[in-house]
Length: 326
Ligand code: NDP
Image (cartoon, rainbow, N blue to C red):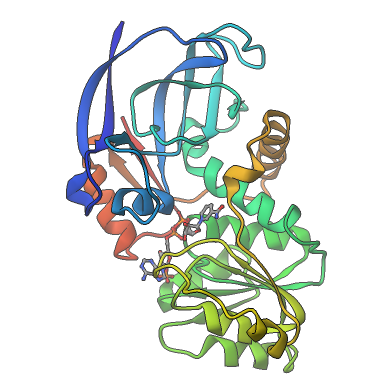
């Protein structure tokens, strides 16, 4: 038995609900492994889980991604072995920890060229960009995508991914400085949606046509405007709720606005299958290894400063990815 430090919540609440606890960690069982974690990723889903928007059985540890070194594997685990460098995004939460025993299926071998910090910063957000661009609706070079919160963790990866594919990405962000960052990372246009009507600006940028696809993780505040920015038969991918959940939708509205399509995906459906998850990670590692996508770590905190990290993320004070160092 070894002692591990983990961040848990006893009940939903603000950042003050986050609590550092120590507990004993044993040997991995069948299909599990034990990881000595070098860096953990911070993601907006952690806020939803902490606040109670996404329900957990309590008390529960938090955190959905990390990178480190495998210490031990249980029966049946063959794709990694002790000593391997690995990274993962995976449910259930529990990744805010220095040491962890967990299911092995979603844990991926991490190429030597990618640091632990980058691994922890990129798995959840990078795999999300992979499924948004390749596994949700056909998107090809020359298509135009509206991407909200483009200076965030998912956003800066998406800007670069779109550029690599030849997709025209119209970014939105909450400040002019964030807009500039999105442009630097490959966005073709950037709109400050706190000062401008983004749907009207998208119409102007697309000669009145609208975009082929909207990728909307902001939720309540942008939902209607996103639909108004789409071309007829365009696809709305609503995949997050940073400003609050989207209220119930009147389906007839989709017909009235031009026979629009809509989907509400989750990364965890896409990576549930072991082989698919490993293949998606390999594609992500190729994008990063080839230099087409670089991982911008905008903020680093100690694991013990996790509440401060949550406060910054919710205050829209972060850019790129945020990691926690155990
Ligand atoms: P970000 O780094 O993008 O941070 C969230 C950003 O949302 C903020 O920086 C802010 O950017 C924007 N935002 C707009 N309105 C608000 C508001 N009222 N409160 C707080 N933030 C706001 O986070 P992540 O990269 O971790 O995640 C981005 C989004 O993608 C999240 O909504 C997340 O839940 C979603 N997601 C969904 C997945 C899925 O599979 N469904 C998987 C991964 C992420 P600005 O100031 O520029 O507006």
